[in-house]
Image (cartoon, rainbow, N blue to C red):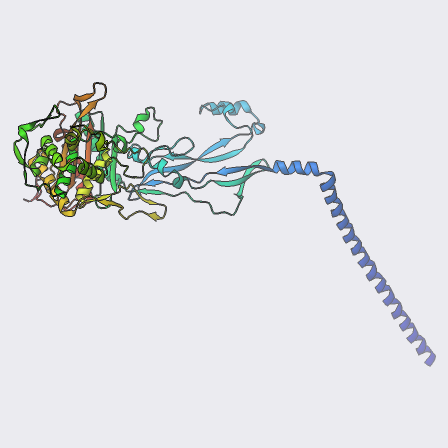
Length: 556
């Protein structure tokens, strides 16, 4: 029995030992197989890479070149131009172009017949590209409104006139470079080629008020038709900060449409420099009062409307004998201002003309501004001192004239006129003083004289109900360059005034060039249009009346 058990034990041990050896052999077999597979795959990849890099380099490079189509420059959407209240005056609208691939069209004749309905031919289409391409188109929702201020762009959306040109860089921002790919028959744009931050396009907000601009243009257009004038200009300015609230020049144009006559693009408010006539008399009156040479009620002999200077006659339309300095403005006496200038002298007079900003750029944010014309005193004739005093022998722009009146209105400080209120996030709200021209007391006295022009003198037709008005008429003979003398047929009629007279909140200038009507005087042509603009403007701006209203139904 003992031997039998021993056999069984040995047998079990033997069986166990055999089984263990078989398991180890199976493990090593599987491990070798896996290692073999890994080596095989690795060698396959190496071989494939070697083949691509060495033997198929040309085909791979050609494929890569076919995938990357080109680098392109993408324009940012052009910024909008807004009025002071955020109303859109100019904007860019996205438009799309459709491209067809002739190879993918089964029935070319059918497509061609369809496109002919829209005046499109296959010859005008790109033959390679499929899909849509976006572009931007400039649109001016208000059409002609403030066209000379806004300006326009060319076919590449580059500003060519007005704010569009002056602020072209700010409106466009910086072009973004991108890489364009062609994948699966389609074109796809990648992200920008670099991580740089591009300058963004900015919106421009103007100081112009859309409603006031509409009022000015409507009344100016009506006046142009009524007086049969060739051209007209009107400006409204805030005298306390220099902001231009409205600026119009006729004839005008629609920036949405092609412009055939390039002269129509010229902004007459800043470029039509001409002899200002009697509106310029505020300069000589201000100068002699500031210098203490005369007081407002000092008397001057106006020679009954006729005075000989350097062999030529200076005349007054209204013959006056002895009148006050205040009345010289009220009756617009050329002889009176000539005598004031004679007392002041050439050098001081020239100094004050320049102090008021004439013969200098105002610096307004518009292209095409002229600086006017004023000869230095060494080139003045024996008559120049006299004739310049009433606005002859020198040129001024309408903007220079209204800015000079604003200097009187705000207490004697010349401000830079401004037409931009903000660019993007940057605000331009603070006034920009250029210099003090006269002291506050002198400016106050001149305003008194200008109020007298409306109450007692040539500006009675500029009166408006509920408000005092101070202003000055100007009827200037135009110089005939061919005949080398002043014309007896062609005139410039203007009126510049402030409301209310003694505490002005707005200054308005109206000019009509070559009125064709029988009555060409400023008192009949420009002053009534000023009154219509002023009446509507004061109501819109809610300027507090300083007089009892004379309108029908109003309380007296």
